[in-house]
Image (cartoon, rainbow over all chains, first blue to last red):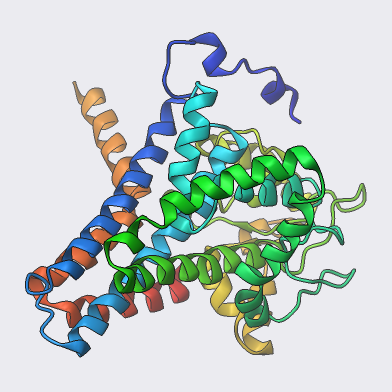
Length: 322
Length: 55
């Protein structure tokens, strides 16, 4: 870690009366509440079809499809990026509030917060690109990932459930905690089913599948496709960096992914500054840098060989000697 | 005063920028009440296609 970063006192420690650990963290809460409001709006309109000009089965299908796609999109960001930041640097100063807000955070993305945190921090960050990093696509030693579509459709919830079952039932304390967290999650996640089971399938479970399969899984794929584990010879080739300004503005700076993996305790709002400080190191270390975000990267990697070759191209501003 | 206005302006831009996607989702969902579900579906498909091409 950069000495200057390690020596920084935490804001919570210097001002213990604060609610948030960092002044920018209220943006995370706002984002989550807008996501919950979007679900509430969709549920209400589904239950009051005349207001939304739903006059028959086809207009209902149109409403459900539009809503499910946008709800899935924002839930993928809310858990995969927004809660993700919280799993590295809890946003509240109180551990109790962190734990309970986390539970009310990930249930709207189809996850118990403890399970997501376990997958991301204990498995993905600690074992990045190693053979036992089962959060990533299956890969060969040279970094070649399995087929994009196969990963999207088989990873969540199928493969991940099997891995979680094996890991979380292996030891008694972990098993007890996992069961408790699963019970809390199921209690919260089942709420829409009590209101209207059909609505819950299409405006709750379906968006969660879209969030996980298409937003979170594709994000995981593109962030590390073609990358190799960190070694002294290749210290910054473990992640791709996405430098699109719009993407990073709307996605809590998750594009600065190499920086995030090397310094996971650096606050998301400070990643652009860290990126500028490490820029030369990234260029010298030949980090893969692209001028767009995850979405276009997913579009490229989902295509044929010609389209995939487009992803391998380096941003011209990050070529040695530029 | 000008500095304060600039700070407020940049803060507002940050808030809307960071919440862009969930706000867009609310517009799509509530918009169905104004312009009907088919327009919402059309705009969603165009938005996803644009995201895949541009960002």
